[in-house]
Image (cartoon, rainbow, N blue to C red):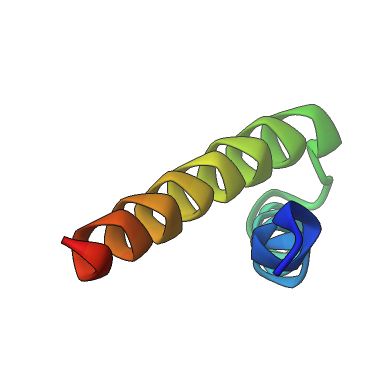
Length: 59
């Protein structure tokens, strides 16, 4: 399995769209930089969790 298969692209995109949509509905304007930063952080956390769980299963 390649490393790209473990990247949470769809999850990160979902976080980005969710935060942008919530900001737009709640405040009337979207903040794409805040949403992108949160989506990248969520993607990094998911990637690290997947790597940790994969390593843990091998042991």
